[in-house]
Amino acid sequence: MTILAKEAGISRTYLYGLAGGASQDPSVRTLIKLAKALRVSPLMLFRYFADLAGAPVDTYSMASTNRAIGLHDPSDIAVFNADVSTPDQAVVLPGEIFQKTWEIQNLGTRPWRDRRLVRVDGEYVIARRTATGTPLEVVMDTHLRSLNNEIPIAETLPGQPVHLTVEFAAPKETCTVTSIWRIEDEQGKPCYGPAFILHVIVNVMAR
Image (cartoon, rainbow, N blue to C red; front, side, top):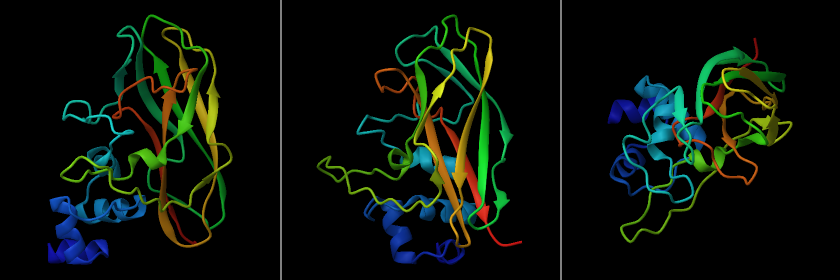
């Protein structure tokens, strides 16, 4: 624990509290630093600590996946194909404007209409609960600005792929930042479970 705390740049007391569920919610930045020290993908920690507005989370629903079945319709199937631009851990300049493009594909039997890609960083920060079930305060610490917090998804017929592009502005200080997005329907409800998300993780540093 001592070595892990040192590598992650957090106190040993806080790390023990986090492991035991007693520490207050860590920010996205803290989870990224901890993931680096553990040498795992930050998404593993995002998903582990996700709560999604108080919904119960089980081991199956939080498993890492590139394929998802609709929450409301089993014939609605999506698959993540590729990071078309700005791969994970890409290096960008302080203040740089860049685009992130993901490719997903409709593998179901129904067309996608009136869907949106929505930024949900706050829902993937730790959301542990107290012994009485009360949600702990969420702490946000993200500085990766996006031009929009949601974008429309073009009508996508069964079998078709679609590219989703978001424009970001990197912070001006050296850091690692992330942004997390999910697909929602016309009523603002998530189409898939919490394991199926799109994300960008970049390292900001002067070259």
